Image 1 (cartoon, one colour):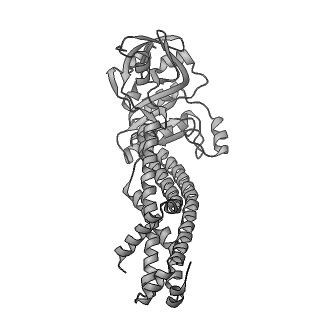
Image 2: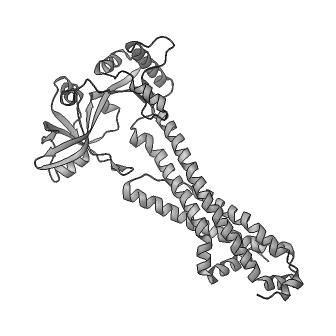
Image 3: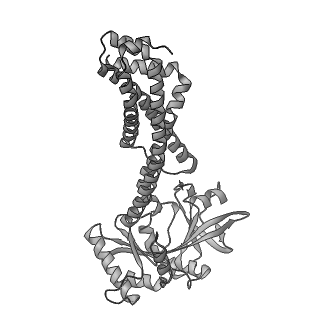
Length: 410
């Protein structure tokens, strides 16, 4: 029997027993859809993390009191005992780091209330910035201007607002020059940022930026730790030189003994991406392990259905052998049918996985990216399961005695 003939018979069998076929393929479909959806999310987020979440270029690094991501309890407790980073630390780095192209400082306050006339938005972020942040952070304005050195020196009550503030509080109005209240204090809007949308369901536009001196005046400066952002003159050696200079400056200011461990953290885009890659890989492996259980169950179901098919078609097998079909021909026929069953399930699973991932992206903004190798892996995985679990039924069919098969009756 030719391969295409075996494929045609397999498709006819599927169509003739629709309900049985659906139940047979369910396990494979669920497993492949799960793996495709998870890997699509991982691919999308991997490409999104550094650019949109951390807003770091390849030549930028951050100095902070503690790492942004801590996975060890002891490290967390140790970092809590460290001294905060203050504005004087930023000034020292800005003055002494000759390998730094730009240096900035930032500090955040969450759960801020922003009000305009009778409208208000809660749960906003108030960011205190130095002017250097505008050339380091990924922030583009659609109108107005950014924070300047004069604003910081004069502790000016001015603010750049995110798109959520502009659209929800000042729809139809030009926000520039308007006065808003941030936790009760009055600020004049001097700039409006371009919208960024949502990441993992959370808006990236619900914030205000003010001069860091104005932030200190409103929220205080004693119990908070700021972040120092620095940009090198390029990636590779220039970036390493800038980081080394900043490390020497900070160790001196924080009285770290020679050979002692840094009591602050310096992180780059690659640091964050490496951490995320490790976490996402672990998440993906867990998802694959869980999906594999479903895949094995689907394979067992396929094997059982193929055994039923062998029993139902015992006389057919006897007739084929009586007409000259070899055991190898019967083996390949049933093996191809099993593979076709799994392949169809894999194709449906791939389609469902992509649809689920893209639907979640549209609903909550979680980034996703479909890659060809992911689709190929899902199809190959399903095909392998079909062949593996189809071997036993196919061998059983191939080993049937033609005379006994011709006498068989259901």
